Image (tube, rainbow, N blue to C red; front, side, top):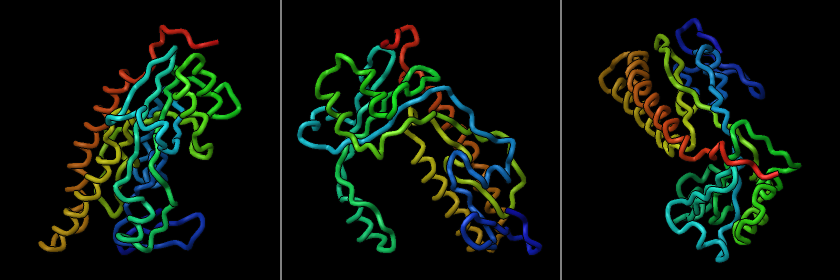
Length: 255
């Protein structure tokens, strides 16, 4: 990525030809390559919390496990979080209606689950599912069945890393959006909504600049000024909520 002589931005890609644009928006996640060039001093912070996340088809057998918005089950040294995902319209059907050019997999309703491990915990088992089941000795058979029937391709160990926007850069033809600049802990429940807020704010700033015949860079600066403020607050809120979900370190982990 580099500044073109015309003041626009030139981007280089691993698997396609370079491209030049008046504005490049880096929405490439917590490990953002765009952020690495634009603001190399802004790096992810590892909270030390590890969790296994997966999903299981929502059958009648599991319908009663998460009737409300979500559930938290505390065990010996671990926490299991459950949440039912019930689609008003199946994603593939919705894409066909709203964005025919987008292809989505045929996914039905499911239970999203996540087991939070002790700080800096590791799997200690060949697969993510086996690691979770090894920590569920003596748990209710329905809970164990939920993990046993999970989609193995969607069960994985993840770390909770955050990115807090602190040091502003001079506005230019490159900006950031979503986790690329303010990655939150999932315990805040605000990551996706904050990214959507970014997109809407940037859209409004750009439209306003065109309507008022203002400078593009000024519009980007207005966006970044507001985004840094609420984005930083979103990260801090998510971190404040993290201890409520992390297992009690005084509880011994099962042998």
